[in-house]
Length: 318
Length: 318
Image (tube, rainbow over all chains, first blue to last red; front, side):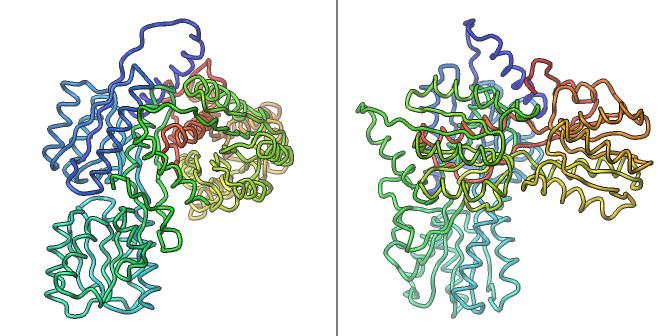
C-alpha cells in the first residue's frame, strides 16, 4: 500500500512533466488533520499551528482542502477518524494520536482504505503503519535532561519523575533518561504519569511532597506538567530545596530560564510547530508529486540562560 | 547560529500572523543549490529534480530565487560555494557534497556567514554543521543487502564488494553490511571504491574477475556501479556463476528485477528525488516561516519481482 501510493505519485510527477501546457481540471485532494483539543498549553499550540497551516496551504493551492478535527480523548479521536474516512473521504491523514495503544488499530484501518498516513509526535504502537513520521527528538530530550541532572547533582541525590501519557514518545524520553541515570548514585524515588497536564502535575507532585521529605530535583519532562509542579512547591513552601527540569519551550518557562530563576535552570525545545511541518510535507506529496515516506525528527536543543533570549516569544501561543 | 536562525524565523511567523492585512514589499530570499554534475545516472536524476523543483517553487513564490550550480568534483564545488556566498549572497544553501571530507570545512565557512545549511545524501564529516539533513536510509540499504545475501547464499560463499565514494553514507552502507556479514561463513574476498560510476564499476570488477576464480555474489550497492559490473561479467562470460545486488532504483535495473533476470534478483530504492524534498523544506523555512532543523531520512525499501512493477518508470530520468 505504502509502495503503491508512492509510485502513483512518482508516476504522476513524470506525467505532469510531460503534460506541461495542457490545462485540465484539478482533482480535489482532502487532507484530514486529527489532533487533541487544546487541553493544555502545548496542544493549544498544536491547534494554533494546524489552523494557520490549513489557511496558508488552502490559499496557495486551490485543489487542496484541509479538514482539522480536534479530539477530547482517544475514543473521541477514533470516532473522528471514522467520519474523516467515511463522510469526508480523505486522501491523506495527518494524526497526532492522543495515546499510542488505543489509536494503533483504528489508524491501521484508515491505512487499509488506501489513505496516506502521516503520524506526528506520539507515534503508534506499530511503526509499520505510517508513511511519514514527524516528531521532535524524544530520546534526545531524555538524554539532555539526564546529562544536566547528573552534572548538576554531581551524580548523587534523590529525584522524582513525572511522566506524560502512556505513549511511545513518553517511553523514549523515560527509557533514555533511566538508562543514563542507572549508572549513577541518583535515586529515582518514584515516577508517575501526569498526562502532560498542569492539574495532574500539581496532584502528582503534591503526593510526592507528602511522601518524600528530601527531594533534590524533579524531572517533569514537560512544561505544562512543570507548571503544576511549581504550583505544588509554592503551596508547600518547598521551593528552596530543589529545581525542576521540564521540556517544550513554553514561553513562561523560557522566561524563567532567561531570568535565571533557580527553580527552572534550563528548558528543552519541543515546539508544537512540528504539526505544521507534517501538514506541509503531506500537502507537498500532492502539490509537488513527491515521495515523502520516511522519518523526520526535528532537533530538540537545550535552552540555557545564555541562549534563552533566542527562544523567548511573549506573543507566542505556547 | 543554528538557534538564532530558527528563532528569527519563529519570531517572524508570529509577526506575520499579527501583520495580516498589511501589504509590504517582500524581501527576496536566495537559495543556492550545489550538486554534482550529471557524471552518472543517479546524479543525472539529482540535476533533473533540482531544476524541476526550482521551476515549481519560483512559479509559486515570487520572493524565492533558486540558483542551481553543478560541480565536476570537490574542488569545483568549493569554488562554486564561494561564488554562491560572495557574489549571489545566498540566504540558504542546499548541498549534496561531492565527497564528505573536502567539503566539510568549506561548508562550515558558509555556515559561519549565517547561511542556513541543508545537507543532502552524502553528509559532511562533522554533523554539527548542517541545520537540516535529508538522505535515504543508508544503514538500511546495507542491512537489506546483507540480509538478502545471507539468506540467498544460506550463510556461506565468496563475495566481492564495490564501494561508492569516500563519504559518510558509503561508510554507513558498508559498516552495516559488514557487521551483519561477519557472523556468517560468507567471505568478502575484497572491497574497492568504484566511485558510483559505471566505468569504475567495470574496471574494479574486471580486476576482481582476474584475481578470483570463484565468486558467488557481488554487492555493488549502487545501480550505476552495477551496470559496469554487468558489463565486465558479460565480457568475461562469467554471468552464470553469480548474481549482483545494486541499489538506487534505476529503471534499467528495476526492469531486470521485474523480468526475473537471474543476475539482478533485487534492487533497493534510493531516489534522486530526495533533492526535491530538501529544496522544498528549505524554501518552506522562509515561505511558511517554520523551524525545519532536524534529520529527515527517506525510506529505502526492497524491490523484488513481486513489487517491481510499482517501481518501474520507463520515462523516468533515472
